[in-house]
Image (cartoon, rainbow, N blue to C red; front, top):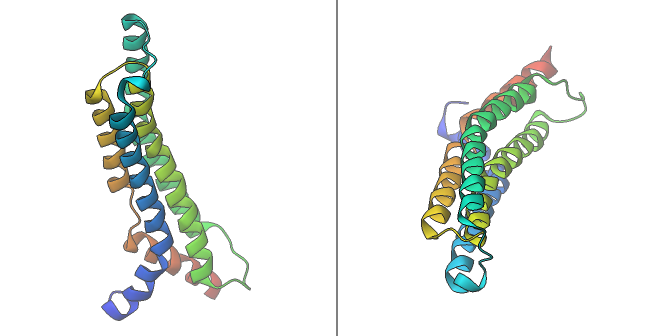
Length: 164
């Protein structure tokens, strides 16, 4: 799997996962644009003490989300490699659907952090909080992006299972 000729089909198999990442990035951009366009009309301010409490809780959830997402992704990747599959299914098709599920779960978990920024803006916080949560979410999208090497490992493990 190391030569570039074999890597090209793997990259083309990852088009749908990359489309999902692109959609998640577009949603993050949409949150920021909506907040800039709608501004104060969108805000339903909470009292300062309640807003600080909610912001703190959301920051804690965001901080916990990253290692939790990493753990869940690690577990899913190992399950993708070790779960038995039907002998009638081709290794690539099985790997493709399994890896797509892994990407969707990872992206969804880190996208929630960006939604926290939108919520805090609606609750009366400024753009700074929106940018922090959106930036954290974008960082998560980068960290947990689809990777050709992970996908290749899944294909190799499934193919090895089918040959046993």
